[in-house]
Length: 599
Ligand code: NDP
Image 1 (tube, rainbow, N blue to C red):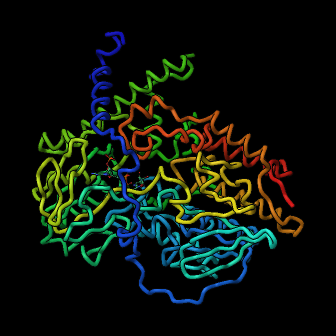
Image 2 (cartoon, rainbow, N blue to C red):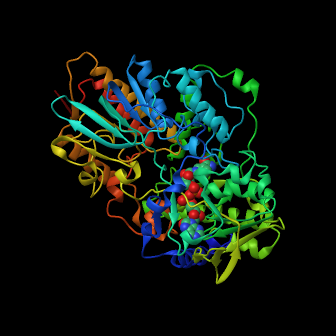
Image 3 (tube, protein in one colour):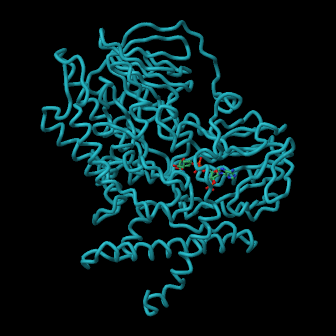
């Protein structure tokens, strides 16, 4: 790079690139995803439901409904809502929790909240007549909204809670799905919607001795308030005499660590890789603003956000949150529009803009954290989208507390768990409690994460069909599995604002089921040609940028630093969310259900 160009930057791009490489190399490991333990067998206690108030006792079901929706999180709820709007009466939701909410049912840890603005994240606001109380909703408000949606659209009727699907099997003679569950059900449905959620299966690190610890342990997605005391707002009074360790420093830890720091006698945060932690700046909803919103405001706002976060140009940024700011800044700092630059030059300018943003994030750690050595440890050395960016105003100051210790494992992670605590950097930390903030399975196979296999026509299993990668039409249908719909990001539209893409999928499903309502259609599934063409298109448009991913520090965004040949095939629609949503709309408007075969 010419010296004239770098001298005003305040940093040396070559030195930063080298530093990023060194930090990534420290963390690369040959076992990739296999470093984590499946939460099953001896570890299955970790996924027991601590929130259930009354254990359900019911007879097994062998009846029939029109539609079974698996998953009572936003994906299932929005689909149920859109189906109700289109007049569908016979809907049964199956959910393993004891109520609706999905992610927000499970993640009740102190401080849990959503980083995406509530006015676009909480679905169906205009339909349910609800206005969030703050720009960034906290978990209890989101959970309550999930239940509001279920009540509003009458989805509690016939719902099966505390029920886990164990197998889905297609019965050719009757053209029905048989849904087997852990409660002995063998219910039947004409259509099934699978909305299992992208991050539903907690994972534990495969640390030596993990089963030897004699103190108390739990995963953040099954918070044990009986042990900690307090609630989602903190005041974890039972920790006042406890030495607590948190393993992991991702988006979840960033939110719960301040509450643990405020309550525990001593807190040790075991860090392998620091998160980038930018400004949060939450504020209450302005009632005047809310009063003056016109009909259709939520959709307009969601689309505005999508356009901006997928790199589109739009005059006004309605949301103005951390996400739109990141992308706006990257683009404006790189300032490439209209200059006729080639791809290489654009990539170089984007990298510079990224360096600049991450320099700000690192400077923030230095400004806030008093101990320079601790501040240094909290600086992330990678490009911003290598990991999930975080936004929080209390996380970094927590490390100024006398009772809080950051244990920087220098990229190595915890070495061992002993009956008394944790060994890191060759030193044993005596602990009463270990909290695993180690996230959820992402790169493992779809059916493993779903927790059940799907057996379609001619006994073909979904796990086998997809062993070399997903095969779908529009991410929604897969040949050999008639009348089955998949709500997922893979081979479909992806946006940071997940509920938006779920809503688009839900509308699409409602449209298709409406076409099947007159009784002339018994089964629908994609043609082989349509499915093959879609898979090819997904691979062709894939934005999986191997160079970028490879240079990234390991994490679930890049399959723990181990390139996966299936990544391009399993990726989302490469032209971005809005073009995907437009494509789906045009498909519906065309009216012939192109690519689907029906009998
Ligand atoms: P993540 O997968 O993001 O983080 C897991 C953490 O565990 C990482 O810091 C990881 O380190 C660490 N870890 C794993 N193994 C070890 C080990 N052996 N020793 C020490 N540390 C270890 O999980 P989260 O639950 O934090 O977040 C998951 C996702 O959920 C987020 O990415 C986000 O999409 C969503 N989320 C959103 C929130 C929001 O809206 N604010 C809040 C919370 C979650 P390393 O980085 O080195 O792998």
